[in-house]
Image (spheres, rainbow, N blue to C red):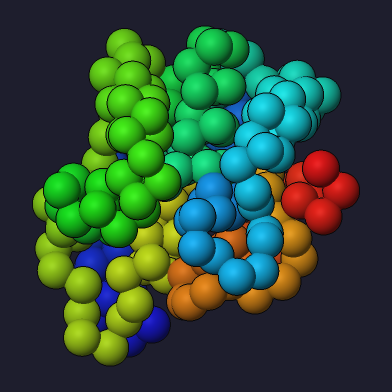
Length: 206
């Protein structure tokens, strides 16, 4: 990250005032559902139900509840499964996306089919959910920065700002690098550099 990008993050976090003080902050990252033409399977659609159960089970194991806050992006697959689980458990949820909403939907949701678009809107419109769009909150992504990495760090810094000891990071991940910058591996490594607990749901074992 450039110093200018760091300045933007610092400024944004100073302005950020959570509506309540959470007991824990559950941060999530996970693979998108595989596109129909993906050559090497990573998170195929037939594993969706198993993954959803694993996410809910992990949240239950580590005691997630109505006194907590959840942070994730809104992509089809892991993000939406996590958001749905948090809505059902009564957590306050913040969805943070790296682009304006039409661009994000095209890049990260609708390619997998209309049902994922409908589910995105369902979690977005839940009374416990707040949507934040990075260009509106932080301004344009600097030329030297990647928007997906920047979005990861935005979520992480927001979580850490509420107390590093409160952060519980859950990832739906195969342990490998992603298809491009800013994937689950990036956020996992950033979490491990700092603080908080990390819990991996291994997609190889679904």
